[in-house]
Image 1 (cartoon, rainbow over the protein chains, first blue to last red):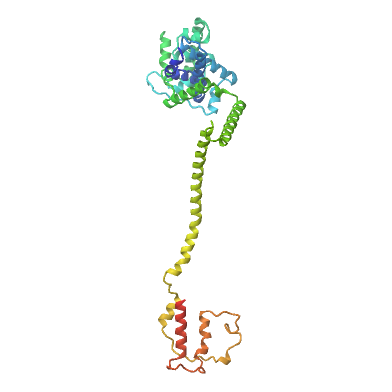
Image 2 (image 1 turned 45 degrees about the horizontal axis):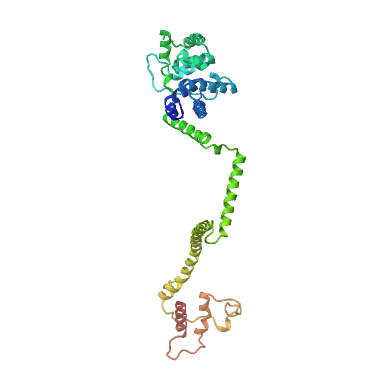
Length: 167
Length: 208
């Protein structure tokens, strides 16, 4: 990956990076800013003459670091805080009435999880990353990621049952 | 992928549809490209603010000095073309502002012309008939009447006699009363003197 193919990478991954940021911070405007910073940092990296072997992993890792930096500067988000600020979940583009949860229902249910559980759930089931890719992004062992994923899935199922959803 | 994972993946299907709108995507791309341009392609713009102000001031001063130096050159000098160019610019600017002044003067003179036209109107137009004149015309010549007021009985403070007051139109008829005084001899052709006087006065007012 070099500077010449940067535009193509933006078109290919901008939606995914935005989605990842959005389901981490629950603020559409902030997610846009984080997406912009993610691609800007990638450009800076390339401008230094360095080569990015896996652009997708690099972008997710950069976005994750930006989200972590954001949470370090701010308090962790909670549903009550978001509702006080007038939080309104983004609508979804499509819906399968048989099995799919509404996007806004997913957002509310994810907010009931711990931040660490929410992170792996988002990466695995919304971003579609494999445990090995998640491990390379979070700099963890793949087995550790699998255990985290298992525990997070169980916690999410419990939250769904508490709110009347059959997961 | 286990059945449990497949179930969860299907559950989050709607969440995976969340994405940037086309306008958001375009705007983000524009901002990223602008950042690239400013931050990486144009490093000179990354100067600190005081340094940028200092540099801009120096450039302006240098440009002003060159223009002043060129104004004192003669044909054949290096900066003479700059002098010619600055004179052309100066002429065009002056002509532009000169046109503006003409427009302003015209706009100022316009009310004066209106006033002149309005002052000329009574001279060129036919005199309008006043109510008083129309009454005189419709009434025709006045019949001689015997006014009961005698000259000797007129009060001293009558307007027009003392000279302090100026007689008006109606009062002038009173002033003409001596013309119908019986003591005044009639005209040779026998017409009543009052009729002549009144008609002459009406004609005089019409002429005025």
